[in-house]
Length: 84
Image (tube, rainbow, N blue to C red; front, side):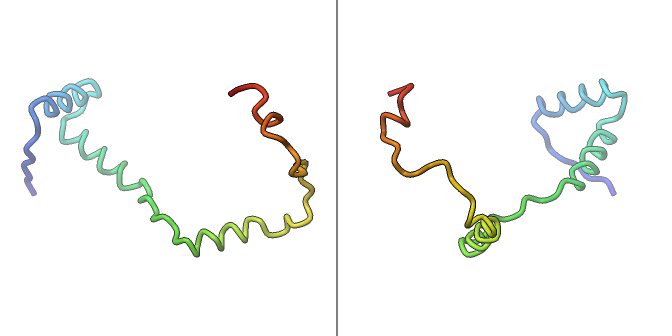
């Protein structure tokens, strides 16, 4: 199957230069690109708010008894002592 794609002349020139630098034809360069691109996993959609909350509950499971060094008594000056 022959297909023709219109490209901006600058893009066509860049493709030709890249193909020449690799010692392949533009067609081979594009074929390699398509083959490599098809192995990239598609970006998964963001979870819903309920899915996110369930993930966070699962992540936090078993951490109820962990001790935190923060006692809730830090002042603004304690936290921001080195900048303002």
